[in-house]
Image 1 (cartoon, rainbow, N blue to C red):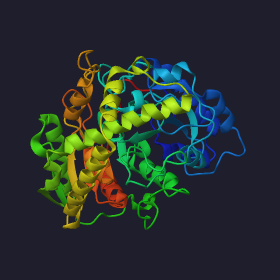
Image 2 (image 1 turned 90 degrees about the vertical axis):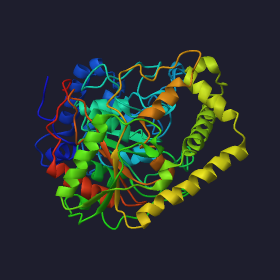
Image 3 (image 1 turned 60 degrees about the horizontal axis):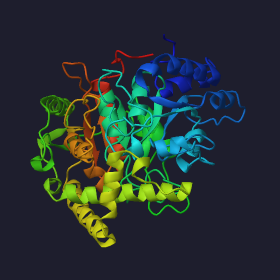
Image 4 (image 1 turned 90 degrees about the horizontal axis):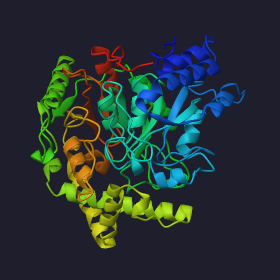
Length: 481
């Protein structure tokens, strides 16, 4: 099937509504039809919210925001919507039919932007793995190759946007979970600066500040507009990013000037081999940046190579898993046991419970000190760092399965895929994955650009420059609406 909207980005769809050429209800009905036709192959949308979406589309109170009338999907993790199912990839919550009574601050801001939520997307249990294969809902399939992973934990959202079901979808990122699916599905994925987007009202931060919220999209302008719509402190937030000098959308199309850009193609510390396709993608973008007038050189923060990093990161990650299970035990009034979650989740939480409070604080101390050393590289005169987003092309589904006798196998296999993304969750710096390369098998290979703390403006300027120089909008996967 096809319609006149499936190839438009969110800005393009909103422009039609604003011009009176189409109604919000027509956009919503078209998106529902696309989801019903294509989602059975992808398993990206797990909770349809069609009736509410139709009601909102014809409401006179639909906000007149930048995305007025545009259909949208929420990832079923962290950001919940009033009265709707909220399961975070957990069979434990699915079996209880768990819902939340109110919108999070982020969801309220999405709605204020005029977005209409038509459903919720698949995610791994508690967002732990960089693939979307929860036992509770089954795997999400990549529209570029149905045997491949979509990445995680925002893999359901990424598959839906890549396949044209909706032009924009919510995503969040605690170790790469916006950027990894963007890379594997051929999308734009920006992880904002820590504190740029509120985690309220429940939380001041998530996982000690590792997690950031935004979207996956098809265009740089959509990403910039979404960031404008949701950024800014909410009452009680423990910290915030520096205020932008002007709207982020105004950065799109602005000359970036001649920047000093470092390139890193080997994994930090040389801990894993980087696939030649990912090296080739990064080197091609480096040449493209040089051709655009930037100074590109082999350089990166030496502190990224410290081999103690992984252990301290896993200490923090494991503590987060233990907290998550305690949180949901409290919320539901039922003590979660090993039979209630996937084996990897339980094993990781067990690891977290074995860590003392002092050891956890020591890990955070080390990571914060390392962050200062990493950030110094930007302070010394560099503008951006260019890396592969991930270390290999989209893996086959099942790659991260854990055998019964080694329940943490999937986590350690994941570390081989993602040496480039977690460090910038630790530092809190903004980082973006861009779909600038496809390999000989037709699989998307993303590249990552990282800026100094608070400098999304610079990322968006350069991203828009690259989008214009090497457009990706006409790249359509085999499975598409």
